[in-house]
Length: 118
Image (cartoon, rainbow, N blue to C red; front, side, top):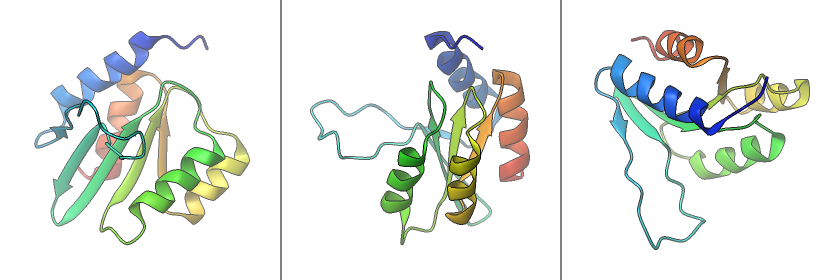
């Protein structure tokens, strides 16, 4: 599958339109690259979801990074990607209770809504 910048924009727009109460996190200029800014945050029935959209396949280093950032927080991290991760990345994500959702923009939104219970 050829990945284009348009995929991320389409997913972002679809999520924003399809999921009530979701908050788009604004860009913060002049911030350190170490500051984690998820694309979306959703609080639903006492649960907090942080959603990060990636334009590429999720890799083990992505899983390790997000695990380190959200450890201790009461939040469910969710990666959204156009491609399915490899088996090792999926295993690491499952061990760390990180959800990875992939596919076309419509498929991603459908799976995301199911995952967060909307």
